[in-house]
Image 1 (cartoon, rainbow, N blue to C red):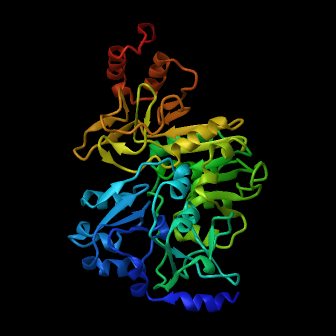
Image 2: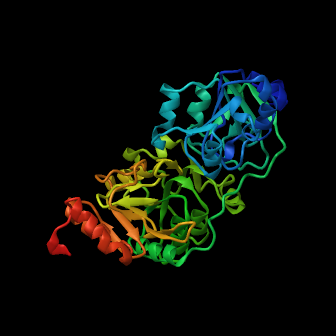
Length: 445
């Protein structure tokens, strides 16, 4: 097959390609940094010709053109698999919704549950074998594109080429249209600024629990990033990576010589992840780097895979938690923030790993816009808040005031342990709340 000739046959303009979209269609934009740019702009220009077009995306890094018009919701509905601040703005505009999921199940959703009329994503330029790399997001894209009736790829020369498992590339033979965009810079995700004293205190407690040769998963956010920075400056060695999201913290560890992966039972020597987002430093590092490996999320997040990785260490954030041990990492009451993502997968997987540990970290308090200070440890989750991690699955909880392991504890033991790492100013009230709920022993006060 002459791949270059086939490429030329399928090459078209964004305006021509998006004519494939019809009113009532389900259109998929892929995931995070892979969302289309030129195709999105061309589809937005067709707004007045279309109605009831339902678009899927996730971890959106910039405001899509289809969502910018004042009457955009009359023509397009946005459906996010995992919300960023941009997704929340689209939902707040009244034209978007969240689609709940455990991230590991997303490829199966595409195989069994959802419709895709047109899929359009950014990819790295085609190689000599006719393949396009999904670049920074293997995720669920292989199953998404396999399900799509029409596949459109938007080539971006700035997208890094990432080596990976089956499910990290698509061949020109399986593409319907090729579009060459404007080669925009890949959207960057910052590390959240300088770590706070609270971040450092929490990170220090966690790093002390990590053995040499451990395999790491870091969630997004300031605290996990601080953990990564501390590991890069620590004496730890021969660490491995098997994570959902690859962030700058891993690059820092790799450049500091901490990541060899030589103790991994699976993918020895490779840093494995489902998708990546960060600064240009990260994008330069993963480009054609045999030390890293992209993989579909039903591999990276599969608890059966995680269980085979000894000393698997999972580190994630939370919004708040209650005295029963339920962790909310995705909403503030009825206000949706992010999503379940892979947090529950990794909490369960780490516990199944020999020597594995899962850590949920958070500051003990949060300061509101009005300056009021509230405890992140609450008697019961706020009505409407989501229990991302059920109490039966949670292991270590960490705040700046300490660390507790909830495994094996009864309700009163849990309440006592959780209150011990709350901010001191709220502990007495939490004890009173626990007494009212029947989960406090007077002898412990």
